[in-house]
Length: 309
Image (cartoon, rainbow, N blue to C red; front, side, top):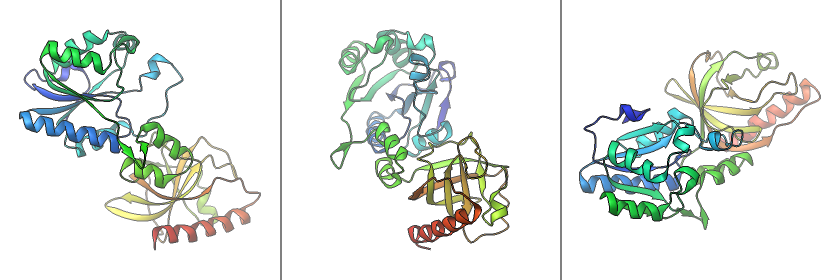
């Protein structure tokens, strides 16, 4: 899959294309449903498929400080889009200039002139352009004017509920890993480098791997989770802790991982992926080491049950 980070990187001979536009910040079942239709349209016309998206949430510009954290990081997002069979991604910088661009100008200059759109698909309720004046009705009209097909894809419903990024974020914020996984169509993941921490865990018999705060993948509710660590081609049973470690010395919020039944692991500076399987308990502050160790041992027994090991 080709990845372009500016309009200037788009090859002049790449089009015509079938394309979609959106934040695509989770690549959930609804996104996958739309992208599948996009690749079908591209195949029907014998052209390439393109996702036009943004390298930051539009609210970072439109409402500074009000943008939600993404479910996926940039590398995760590109990987999931590629898994859907898309040929190229155009990551636009959502700058003040782009935010101020009239909807008609956006369509003509980017979709038509640069990408040579032959087919355009967006989700129902899609808005774009300065002041969010562009909508599906306008796109349908511009499709006739510029000679491309247009389709507004209906919202994806699962168990009577619309699948959305906000619903996934709400599930993760509640620690409902299972529901988030259903909406995503896969387990939720956090990927990052293992870095040096306070090394307190090893002093009480539970050495943990601290995942860099630059990790990709939304951190769920503070607490303990059963999961797997993927590293060096292995899948290792893991206790995942999300929080600030306030029992000993409060630190900025991060993910820590204790691998069960494996000793002597050297994970420093390795890229690992944490796969969340089940919620075990909320984060707690303990009065002493003995209480903490007893609770960790209870956690591990619950994790063994959840992972069936």
